[in-house]
Image (cartoon, rainbow over all chains, first blue to last red; front, side, top):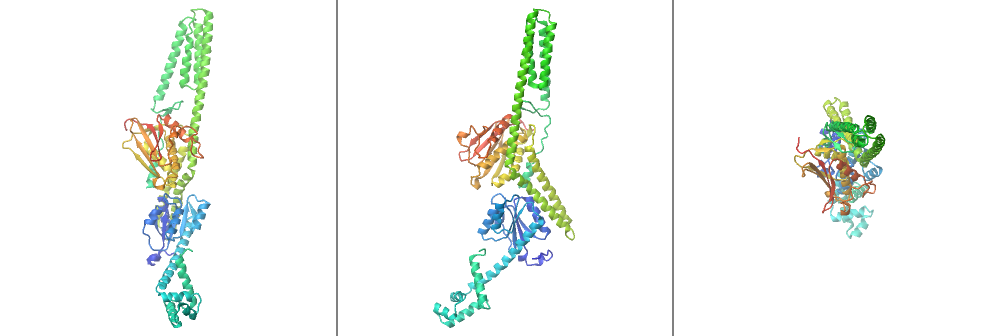
Length: 221
Length: 380
């Protein structure tokens, strides 16, 4: 996604990305803030993972730059903690002394990048942009899924029963038999389901249903 | 703020001049005093030689006053180098022979025998004295090497931490420099921001060099030099140096100096070595302690006049009562990779400073290591 500094303030507030920096070293935090500012990225600085969790964070596409070694909760444990709390922020790790097991654990946990201090600024900025782009897509998908979930919630019990059987590929007559209602009723309910969900065809309906169930299982699996 | 703690921890370079160390390892401090002591010894020794020579010459040949020259040789051995002692011994032999030729009273044969006995006594005493001082010297040398070995060993355990401590400011330097370049490359260049970046770079580079200086201070082969030091400054230096290790293990440190502490007589490198050793041991001992109790309290107090007491309290595994007596012995260790010299060296350093070191197990778990250093009676 192209970043245009001059256009940023005109964009909707929600779309302006923010970079969270969690590092216990003040010098490193300040330098990172300045580097990000020089490419037009806004940042929020935190000295520890606790501070990050307690702070009020803006609802915007974000990326988290995380130091591995910190007093209290380490960066890797913090990654697990975020996953437990359902906070899916793309993470770029920075560490002074990275080893292979550490980076394997970080990448398995879904990290964007694992950089060794001192890092090349372009590597860090690329990783951050990638993280923000990933977060933006996630947020859009999440919004669509929310919408679908809301629509599904607006169906009544009878309509839901019809929908579940329709997407299994059953014919109206079979559904009528299974639900012990008339074929006309099934047709009416089916029409209402298509309208409420916003599906143009049976294929649409199947695809939406899949997404709704995907959302129920959770975004990550 | 960690940053300010680091700056405070930067120890001023010892400005000690006029401190001298005697061969036996006792640290002498008052400027000029050592020189006066040497002059007095010279005067006393030469006076004694003259007295013996006169007495030997005016008494009869049967009276062997010359054997008292052994006292002169022993005095010379106390403060002169090997060559000086040999010169003094040779002078004594010459004077003995001179007295023999100048003396006319008494039996000649008895004189020859007495003279020969005196010469033998001088020669044997000189030989034994020189042998003894070379042994003392070798022992002193060995102890100094052990102290340094223990220090390098301690620093070796901290390599990862030190690397981390140096890498942090370097990362900030590189990042700030990149940010500065980007501010300059912007159109129009943002000079104010670029200047700020440069100022941050200077601050961080100085911080890195302070850390390097601390490490070099501890690892260099330095002659022991004692000076009047601020006890809290000594502690702050050690806390700054072990910051990485403390953070990595989630150990909090509280330093509580009593009000109006007097200055302490300390070789800062050696005393910091003692502190570092105790702090690192405490961190190891607290590895299994629940995170919220991992606290290290360093108290500085002046309860006994003339001494400042350093007390380092941890909440670790503690010291079993049967080990309290032996914990400061060489090769006593509870660590699989330990050499068991850290605390032994600590004791010899503290005792060379005229202080005492001991450990106290805590009833609620953990241990307190105390040591004392001589303090200036009044502040100023």
